[in-house]
Image 1: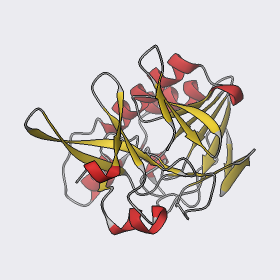
Image 2: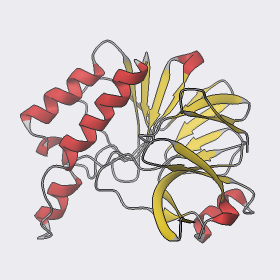
Image 3: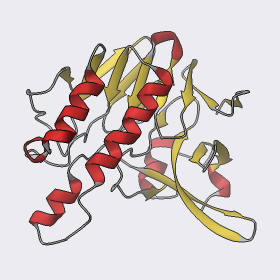
Length: 230
């Protein structure tokens, strides 16, 4: 895995020879393409759970869109790719409040937007801007929802997280998982859980522990060898 600290505190991550900025929010930014990538927004997960009698504070979509707005403001991308499971279920877009609908529409203004189909939202709504695709290839990079382990792949779906020991205590955080040939992105949504990078699902993608967890810290992204996580 190739990674380096930038002077501004951001971390750069190389995938198949392409350098991305690993934003502390959990997004990737490809400066040469002016392309921002996020994954697993799971908008309206809270209202989905409420329909099943599991009551959660109904603020997840607002919080997720606010964070998305902040990272878009930081990088001002020409294009945004959302790597699947953008909505928590097939009817989630219908439950968006007018305010959140307006927020999302505003984020899409004056930029290209690509919705990648996910397992939660295989048929994305057509009442928002942007285009829908199963996957997108740009140069050596293939963007898709579910990882296959292919060279040059950037995917989501698995919601990677890492547990590390620091200063005598254990800390668990979302992370990017990458070995320089492929990468799996953390879930961006406020109510999304995580799967340990030591889970067998990651072994199927990376084959060995010779990959890096780029852990989302409070002030920066920390590159930690997967073998040091548990």
